[in-house]
Image 1 (cartoon, rainbow, N blue to C red):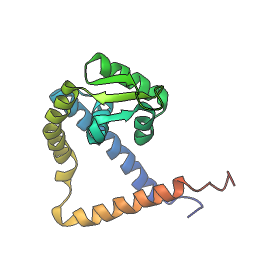
Image 2: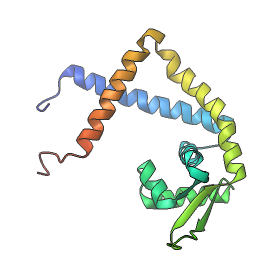
Image 3: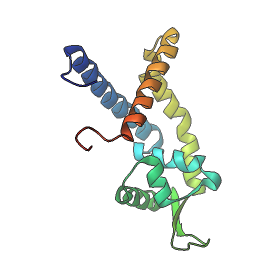
Image 4: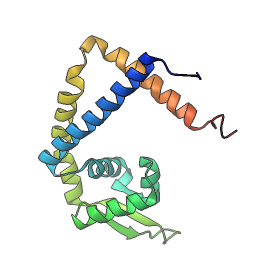
Length: 160
């Protein structure tokens, strides 16, 4: 699809931008108020909690979150100062690898944040969707994710 955008397409995009920012702001505010975690803290804790042994190479963690390594390094430093994660060097064949693990406090903090986080998501997002529309919304979101992933790996016309 190329060419100019329609007025309806511009309205849809603007509504998406406003909603995305509003959801992130309110859910992030709730997360901080209930758990003293930033959205970035929560994202890192969630990814580590789902990793085998709650341990990952820092570069692998950055790649999984699609973050620059500099951003990851600063985020991990702040979280380590708060006792949520621990950084160390690997002991395997590549001892240079920087590893990140959840501390007991980090895991406990993450687990305590889950209930309030989902309550916030429900309040700000899910409660606004009529139950009989969930399948429709899910299909649209999956279509957009598929499009994004397909487009992300294909050079644009300007690059080819």
